[in-house]
Every structure is written in structure tokens, then in C-alpha cells.
Image (cartoon, rainbow, N blue to C red; front, side, top):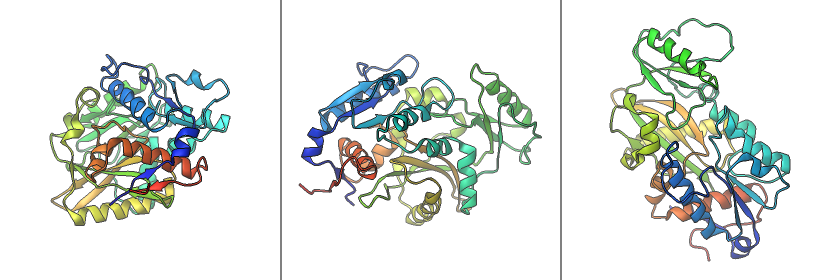
Length: 339
């Protein structure tokens, strides 16, 4: 299966691209706060520079204040230090009329709201864990109907497992909700019934026809996910423990569910759908969608892509070229081995 999309030589030389990423000007070493995220941003800069020579760098939203001198914004500043910051880069791009990576701001908002994406999945007949959302400043709510068993409690827009906690009962869950809402930046909180199963990821990239292209489904059946922490996600290469799914029936059933969900949230340029699979019952549950997820060469999307025999650089170019084609920045792309 050859899903590669490539820019023409003319477009490579003509186009000006800005990379917006917090650590894009770093030296490639881990950051004290963001860990391996800094290594990832350095790699992304080097990879993009090999694809498009006219690459400029931004590391802060203020770098978007001035009139743009670029044709396309490759925005990966998803954790800007304030609530819902992942929408600001796309909003600036919309303000300036510059095509940008990812999705429209409204779709980014849906994708980053774990509660709303679960509602979309349920509307399309896809199983999700029982869940309830607790909005900061919202109406008072009783304990959820599933409070008699273990629960996962996390910020409704968390990333990289920040703020996630496994709670054995409602007292512990309520304490964690209160703690998250007492942060300097208060958070909405989602509470889910814990599903004791295997983690499954479905990576998605742009296809040559303008629709989604699905990469090999990935499986993580290692350590107990109740003990995974934010620091582990930022400082350990956990995604090297994922493997390509070898269960054709499971893969087909999950891909069918993702296709049913697509009318709610397409178009977006790349992402990762996450499910929990329970082998004992054969059921699987939609957990969340990570739009504009981590594209580091050691993470899940790149591992899935490389299982097809393609390079990490070709993954970045496929996403870039597909996004540009979708938004009319370029008129055509090259595919596969096309010269």
C-alpha cells in the first residue's frame, strides 16, 4: 500500500512555509518541562527544511501578529500554556487568510473536547465508555450512574495524559475533579467508567482523493494503563511498545466505526483515533480523537507509517502536500513512486 503524497519540484522551491512550534529553535535536547517534546520539535524543523527550502520558524503566537510572509502555516503549537490554546494558531491563520495545517478552529474545538467527540460517536452508533462531563462554573451535578466502580478522571481537553487519574470510588474522583478545577487555569473535567482492555489506535492521514487514508491499526497491550502518567508520556518513548494489529476482524470492525464517525469531523489533515478493546467480549469502545497529534518519528503515527516501508520524512511530506492540496495552495500532488 503506497499512500505517499509528494510536492512537485516547482512547488517545493516556490512555497514559503512557517513552522510554529514551541521548541522549533531548540538544539534537540529534552526540555526540563516538556521533555522529549523539544526533541520532537527539533526533528520536525530539520525534516521540514529538507522538504521545503523556504522555511521560517515561529515559537510563539505573537510571531503571527505581523502580516504573513508565508503561503502556509504548519502550526504545531498545541499546548500554548492556556486553556484551549490549540485553536489559537488556526484562528490567527483564518484571520490572516493563510492556509494552515490541521483543521478549522471549530473542528479543532470538537476534536479536543473529549465529551463532545464521545457524543458524536454515540450519535453514529459507536460504543463509548459511560461518561459524564463536569464543566467549570457549570450547573451542579450528582455523581454519575457508574460511580460504583473504577473511573478515569481527566481534564476534558487534556493531552499526553496530563491530569489523568484512575479513581477507585466517587470520593476519590470528586477530590480530583475539585483539584483540577482549582488549578490556576481551571479545567472542565470528564469522568469515564474504566474499561479494562487493550488500547487500539487508528492513525489517519490525507488521501490522494481528498478523503482520509487509514494507516495500519496499532495495538498497545503492555503495562496497566491506569498507572501511565503525564511524566512518562513526556519523558519515555512508550510508543515504541506499540505493534501493528494482526487481527483482521478487529481491524475491519474498528475501521468501519471510524468511517461512520468521519462525517462529524472531516476534514482534518491527520490524527489518531483511540479505542479500548475487550478481548473477552469482543467489544471495543471509542475513547478520543487526537487531531494534530504528535508526529515525532518514535511515536505511534510514524511507527504505523514505517510499517508500510516508508520513511518518516515521506510521512511529513504526505501530510503537508495533502493539506496544501485540500486548501488550494497547490493544484496537484505526486503519488507513490511518481517522478
